[in-house]
Length: 143
Image (cartoon, rainbow, N blue to C red; front, side, top):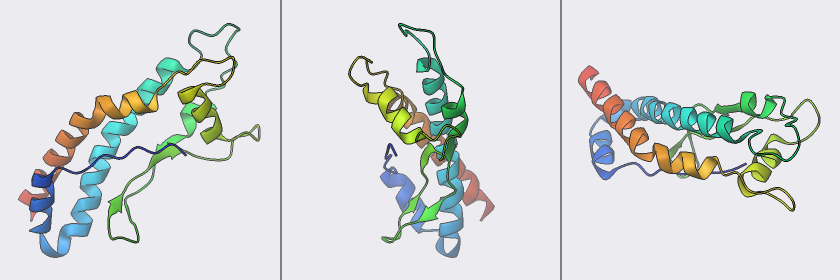
């Protein structure tokens, strides 16, 4: 599975630590708000590259785009909250969505790369951070 990581701003982490018992609950909602922004950008970016500029007619079924999604917020073994954006498996044709996404992102012999994940990560970083900060401020006002 492709991996993208966005670091939380220091100001966000300071505010988060001051919230006491509700920290985990709030962190999950804040991450989900940021994740939605990134997911929307990845979907848009993926849609813009699938089937475009091919030498032969596209055989896209739309299954790769439909399988793109986001996990709920989870805590890893180091105590960090994470959300993953990736592709559900398996496909109906037996192939791996992660494999097909990798071929699109990096290309292969005879098929040029059509990056969609890395540009989406770069383009959505500031909007993601802004959405997370806004959600945090909303959650702080509720406490």
